[in-house]
Amino acid sequence: MRSWKMLLKRDIKNSFGKKVFILLFFLVLFQFWFVFTSGSVDQVRETGEMFYMAVVFSFNFFGSIVALALHYNGISGEREAKFLDLILTSGISKRKAYLSKVIACLTVSGIFAVFYSFAMTLIYWALSRDIGLSLMTFRYTLPIMAFLSVFGLMGLMLSVILRSSRASLVACMIIGGLLMPRLFVMMVDGLGNLLGFSQQVADIVYMISPALIMNALNGYAETSRLLWGLLLLLIYFTTILWTGIKVFVKQDELNYGE
Amino acid sequence: MIAFIPGDFSLSRNEYGEGVGGMRADLAIDARNISKRFGDFAALRNVTISVPQGDIFGFIGKNGAGKTTFMRIVCGLMQPSGGTLEVKRHIGFLPQSVRFRDSMNAGEALRFFAGLKGCDAQENIRFARDLEIDPARKINSMSPGQQRKLQLVITTIGSPEVLVLDEPTAGLDPSGVQQVREIIKILNRKGCAVFISSHVLMELENLCDTIAVIEKGELRYQGACGTAYEIETGGVDAELLDTLPQPQREKLEVKDTLLIAGVERREVPAVLQLLYERNVKVFGVKRQGIETLYNRLMGEG
Image 1 (cartoon, rainbow over the protein chains, first blue to last red):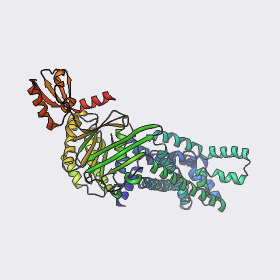
Image 2 (image 1 turned 90 degrees about the vertical axis):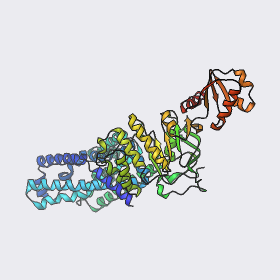
Image 3 (image 1 turned 45 degrees about the vertical axis):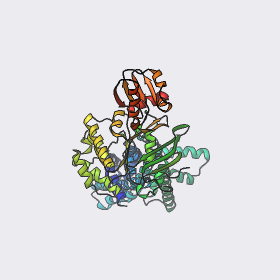
Image 4 (image 1 turned 180 degrees about the vertical axis):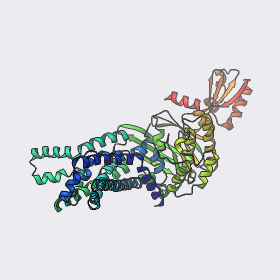
């Protein structure tokens, strides 16, 4: 257990590279631009509701790619550097190595979400000087964490399955693009027309896009949507985790980087 | 039937048993009929290798012959498709060209891996200092030779009973090669079995007690580094050999002025005596090197 904690500590430390802060800064900046130009502060004041776009507009476009970019080479990078060989021959099982990455991913997602929410609070406070209104941005901290975790774990899983960081990056970009809410809603609508989805069914299918799960978890949505969101989140987590670990444990560690 | 595969992919050496039916105490690695297939491609075919405890064992083959695959199977990083494998409990593995992605210094890296193995790093830090590795120096700023030496020290953490080294001197300068060779000898003197692959045949000749040659996934040879002696003569008539009694005649072969004697070391004086009795001038005797052996095996292939 002590040896695993050592690995976990290293994985968490490594996950907090410059990359995290650069991407965080970029998302905050993009959101600031949106809040500043769209009059979000006035809308929030009028409605008394910290609506989705007012906090996570930037995630609609770049959130998935940011989360995937943080973890796309979680395992493959270590394989290519042959560092994983040293770890696995030091008494650490593959399960433990993977779980350590998973926890590091969840930790980064959590801290990223807190930092982002804090930055949003500062932006709203700077623009409104209303502390109550500003603190409402923290309603999105957990949904953001869930969103980043789903994509982060997906990146980790792809890095295992595809073995190569390059292939994983390409796959992450494609999946991140496909699950972008605007595009995904359009795809579901098209499919819905073809298959005759009712609006109720379509609303649930939309939530396959994690950004729309995030919208359902902000506390303003009706209970049924919230429950569907939680259920889909659970399905996402279990499927991604199970697949990642199963594949990783069964894979041969080839002579990567040759 | 796979009787014992290290770790069921948990690779947790600490959880290993001593092998099915109990492993022979004098062997560090006992691999029997190991096969590995990647789809239709057979990377290894019934490879049987026994590495005695305390031996330095050289593993030779062309690129793609199956050396690394076999080593990875021994270390539990790959599952064989068939065969039985028994390996000593504590094993250290040095893969080819490890890159450190972390911004660790040498001391931190040693403490990290010692922590993973549940050992104290102090002894290894001292060992690193002996090898002129500064524990406070960032690994990324070290020369490839220094990094390789550090990796070698990392593999020795926890006093492994077997060291598996995949081309440990690749990319090193001559002094780095010498130092790595010395480290291997030091570890071997401590009783550690060393299983080493290299393309530098001279290096293996200087280091190894036993070698194995693998070609296209098949073991071509396992035994002493040199199995024959080259006797430089003033000229030997092939007809002269026919006058020799049959057991000796079979073991001798004439190549120009060289007489190749495929005999044990203890039989060499008897061969020389035979030549002396037949007035053949002898100018020198030397054991055939790995290179000759290797070329002969590859030629046969």
